[in-house]
Image (cartoon, rainbow, N blue to C red; front, side, top):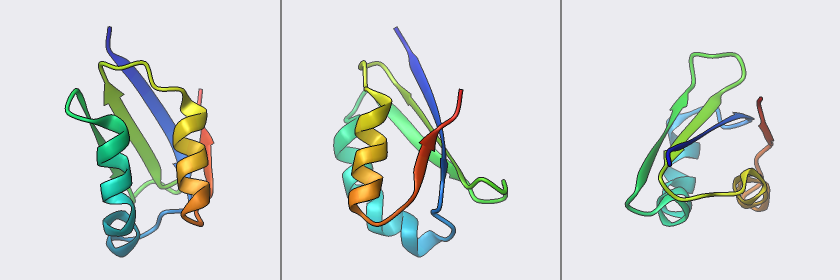
Length: 73
């Protein structure tokens, strides 16, 4: 079953994305993908995955990297 997660973040440029890319790739593995919409005022992170991934896992990982992250409903 496909899971779609959407987050508001403080990631605002390509350097930030490059910094967290390995971490996101390892969390999402091969069964999904992620992208950022930096044009949106909330710097949206969208994740689609076949695995069940708790949203708090993403928020905790980004927070440890020094970024703000909040799941959007």
